Structure formats: C-alpha cells, structure tokens
Amino acid sequence: MTLAEQGSNPKTPSGFPRNLILWLVGGAAALLLMILLVVAVSRPPAPALIGATPSSSAASEFVLDNSEAERRAFAKAQLQRLQHDGEVVRELLGDCEKELQAWAREIEPELTGKRGQAVAAAPSSLERFSAVYQQPRPRKSDIDACRGRVDALFEPVAEALTQDAVYLPNAQITDQLASEQRFAESSLQTLRQLRQDAWSVLSAAERSGATGTRSLHDALAELDAARAQSRVDEIAARQDSARRESTALIAKARADQELAYGQAEAARIAEETRRELERRRAEDATAAERSAHDILRNRAQDLAVQAKYRPFLGKGKFGSDTNVPGLLSFNYMNEIGALGDVKNFVNAACGRQIVIGSGVNPAFTYNDRERWSYPATEEDWQEYGRRFEEFRQLAPLFIELKLLRE
Image (cartoon, rainbow, N blue to C red; front, side, top):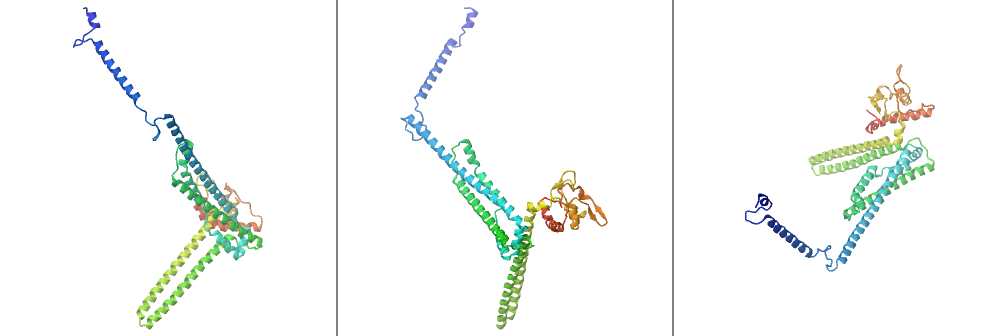
C-alpha cells in the first residue's frame, strides 16, 4: 500500500475505519429525533379554557371567543358610563365658573354703583344685602381643585378606552366621582341662589326710588363695625350682670361671717370678668379689622377698580430700575410729590408736571403707561379726589398683588 492510499483511508487506534464510526453516530442521532417527534405528536393538547369539553375543540374555541367579547363589551360600557358621568361633573364645574364670573360682573360693581347707593339708603335693604353678601361662597380655587381631582380619576379610564383594554374601574372611583358631582351640584346651587338673591335686593332697591350718596361698599363696612360694637356691648352687659350676681354672693358670704372668703371670691370673679371682657373685645376688634381688610382686598382684586389706576399700575419703563418694563414704586411716587395732594396726584396720572413748592417736577411726563384725561369740571375733580383717597388706601394691597412696588 502506498503512502497516498494510507492518507485517504487512515485507521483508528482500535482498527475500525473512521467513516464507519461517523455513520453509526449519525444514525443514533436520527433515531433519537424520531422518538422525540413521535412523543410530542402523540401528547393530547392542553384545554384552552378551564371547563371546556375536550371532545369538541370547536365548541371550546366558541366559548372562549364569546367570553372574551362579553368581558370587553361590559368593561367598555362601564368605562363609557364613567366617562359620561365625568363630563357631567365637568359641565357642572363650568357652570360654577360662569356663576362666579356673573357675580363679578353683576354684583361686585354695584358696591360702588347707583343700585348699591339705593340699597345703602334703606336700612332694611342694607340688612338683606349684607345677609346675602356675607354668606360663604365657593371660590375659583375650590372649583379648580375639584376639576383636578376628576381629571386624576379619569387618567386610567381614558387610557383604557384609548387602548381598548379590558379594564373594570374600582368601586372607589365611582364613589369618589359621585362625591365630586355632589360637590359641583351643591356649589352651583349655592352660587346661583346667592347671585339671584343679591340681584333681587339690588333690583328692589332701584325700583323703590331710594337715593343716597353713600356707596354700598362703605355702608357694609359701617354695618360690620356696628355689629362688632353691638357684640362688645352685649358682652359687657352680661359681665355686668355677672358682677351683680357675684356682689350678691359676697353679701351673703359676709352675712354668714365669711368676709375673707367673699372678698377673695369677688376679686377672682372680677378679674376673670375683666380678662374675659378684654379677650372678647380683642377678638371682636381683630375680627372687625380682618373683615375690613378682606373687604379692601376684594376691592383691590376687582379688575374694574384696578382699571381706574392704570397710570400707576402694571409694567412700564418709567420708574423701572432698568430699561426693561417693570412696576412703579409707591415710595418713589411719595418722594417726587405725586401723592402730596389731589392736584399733584391728578397731574401725575395725566402725565403733567408736578408742582413742588416754587418749582416743578416733570417726571411723570415720561410715564409710558395709560394716562387720564385732565379734569374739566368740578364733578371730575370730585371723582379724582375720591380716587386719590382710595389709591392711598389700596396701595399696600396693590403691592401685595404685585401691581405696584414698595
């Protein structure tokens, strides 16, 4: 045998040909594969739905498809119902905002209007209007907070409807939505009723022909102050009665030869009475001050009131520390004499020179904000005089509202 023949047919150490070994290994692998296929084919299929009858695969598939479709239809109907209820709540909240706007448009301006003067001229009308005006009303922030809660509730609902997912909302969502709807309905009823009641008083006063010069705003403030004083007087009367009773007790104690005890007890009662009276007076004074401050703040927030002082409120380059439009400084107005008297106040608002002593200050001629028309009649001067007093009164609140700098 040649070397070439030996290379083409090499022997294993045991003496068997290498090709024969490879053939035996391949055959064994093929046989194992066939056995695995037979086992896999002969295994019965797992049921697709628990409880389905194995003898009828078509029936199983029909039950599975119908069950899935019913679940999806039920879930979608629940979500759509919730979505409709949510829209109802949103519409109620929108109506609440309209009522707030109607109050600001119809009722608030009458605090300084003709109808308000008619109400202020009649004590009975003033009492009726005060009873309505002092009632607590839902605020814009309350309405916005409710809308935010409703939107948060509907995030998973909207997502499920968009993705066509099988999602049943939790019962807590339904309960919470019902609670928000009750809040929205109650708020709308309260706002609507109070506005109608307030307008009824204003209209009745106007029809009565009553006239007066005092604004309803001032009349309400005076009425609140009178009520506060009445409460103080009532407390004082009660304390005086308590002192008389304690005096009688002291006399009895003296008659019973308990003079020392009676004097000590009288002193204690008198001291407690004094402290209680002082505490009540302080509380009423604080309440009156807070009420007056709230009235002023509501007036400062009134856009109609703010519009009267556009020459001084809002942003402009005049009075700004830089060339960038900014707020006017109240202290600066004082320093240059714009608030010294009515005439200088009017000149500043009209963009005219301010007279100081024997000289003039032309500062406000450079004011780039809106300007007033210079008064032409005595009535104009009287109106600007009222504005002068009101602006000095509202200036601290304008500063708080970021309409004016200190």
